[in-house]
Each structure stands twice: as C-alpha cells, then as structure tokens.
Image (cartoon, rainbow, N blue to C red):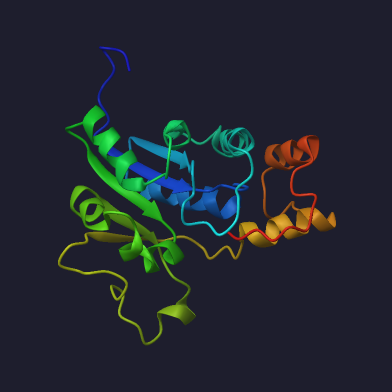
Length: 211
C-alpha cells in the first residue's frame, strides 16, 4: 500500500476451501461488504485444510478460480496468505497477520451459518472472538425455529452480527458431483469459473469430496 493511500478502517476476512467458489460465496461476500461497510474484504482460500476429511484440489487451481469469481467485486481482494503458509491453515493466524499490518482497523470474520455452528471447535477461537466481530449469514427460517440465535457460541466472548441475504442452496459437494456427471452449472458458478473448470478438466471423477 502506497504512503499516500488511506488505511482501511473496516476489514473483513472470508476464508474457505473455494473448491470451487460458487454463487453463494459471492452473495455472502457482497452482503458483507455492503452491510458491514467494509473498506476491504480479504478472500482467503485455505492452504492445508487440517479439518477436511479429503484432499483439496491443487492450490493453484483454487486460487485461480477464486480470483475469477471475485475479480469484479469492489473492495474484495483474493489473498493467498494462507496458501503461502506452511503447515495447518488457521484463521487466527491470518487475522493476527492482518492486525499487525493494519493495527488501527476493525476486523470482521465472515462465515456461513454452518461454519458458525462449529466456531467453538476452531483453533484459538476465543482469540478470534476477542480480536474481531463475527459476521454470520442468516440461517434458513426453518433452522431458526425453536433455537436461540446465539446458541452456537458463548455470548460472553463473541460479538456477532447477522448478515441478511437470500437463501442460496448451493454446496461445493453437489457442484463437484454435477461436474463429474456433465450437468449444467449455470445456476451455481460464474461463467469464468465454469470455463476454467472445463479448460483444466477439474472434478471429472466421482471421488467423494465434501465442502
């Protein structure tokens, strides 16, 4: 960042495997930038996904697809920070690195409701909760019925804001299966990502992959 450029005051982190990045990821990023009034959203494809029961697609492919998926979204920048790190890829380390780079900024960790439900299993999650505000996609109404909105975390430790966005029932698991079967992906992926997958012959086998 140049000496004359203003420092970002509100920074979001949006991590994930992005294997592949789909339209629900894009919608969540757009909602976060708009509703949180972010100066920058760092989209962080994961490196060594220690929590995944299967191997991810090659890092260069996931990075390239993520860059294509978010290329035209203002204030979003695909950050290879986690891919450049050796060993397990932890959100807390990425947050620490960005806090060191931008010590005056306020931070937000953007996630889907499924990730939020498992937040207390994240590595050093209490530090994430102290350093940043969680920004969580609203759950589908049928999942909210009869449940407290903060049941997935300790309200004493976690600051949370709920992001409003339409329910987009997409999963990378289903998308990869559709790829393997040669089915249309027009409702799930951007044209640029579809073209990249086709050109590089990704997801052409039936190997089980989870989101």
